[in-house]
Image (cartoon, rainbow, N blue to C red; front, top):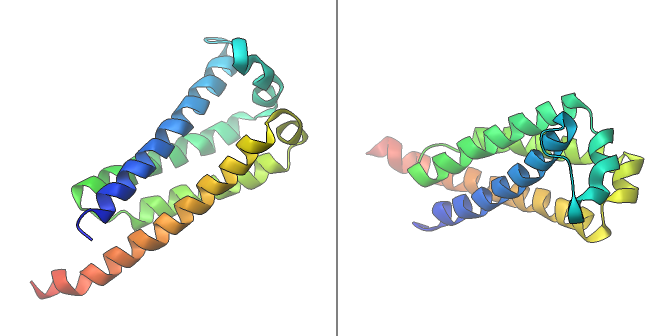
Length: 142
């Protein structure tokens, strides 16, 4: 139990890095600061199809995940920011999956990985909630 929350923090931190990578590519391409080239050039129609409000949602979910990650490492309550991140992440994925460009441009294995990651965050959310719930009476008694 002692290592569960830091382990979840590492996994969530890696997911944050994955999100930051795609976020940087998308914003860089949309602003013209870092146009997509090489292997990423094929994603240009998808990044062009993303609206700025979708990117704003993405920004908030990344911030929520960063807060949850830091709280997992520091022993604080991480359920609320993790739940906010999960809800926004799931909503974002549902919206993207409804886009024709997502279905056409994004490879099937990446689409599957997107679903797996959101489900993994849900499992992590349940585990974090459970650990915080089960440790609450002990902390109150002390």
